[in-house]
Image (cartoon, rainbow, N blue to C red; front, side):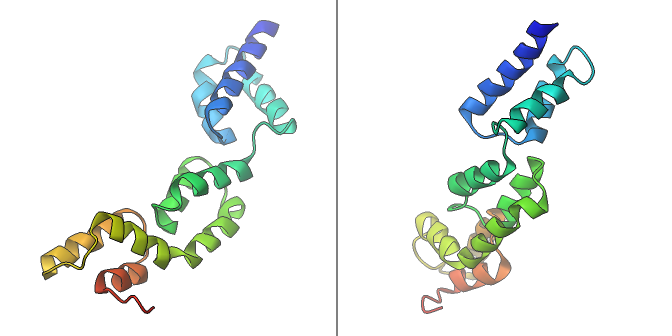
Length: 149
């Protein structure tokens, strides 16, 4: 019995050693290994109380790894998929929205480098940026080539 509890915590710590995980992610990944009802919750409660599990760190990690290449809406979608609350991610998303145009311009520059020659090319560039989660206004300005904005 005691060994199983250590095993669940050990598995959780092994996952956390690779990258930050939200509590919801750990619950999903470790649920198949739970042998006794409540065992997983107790293990995660203990790890969270000791500071091993932190939704704030998950938000910071995703912003750091993905923020430069993705728009705010796509980052929000990824954080929600990880089970992060809107309250926990609100400030980070607000700062991302503040740099959305610059980040969209950089992603566009790396992928395309020059304005499209025809409407079909502009549409392709717009779809690409939209798939990365950038907002419509930023996409319009980047594809139109308004460098002075």
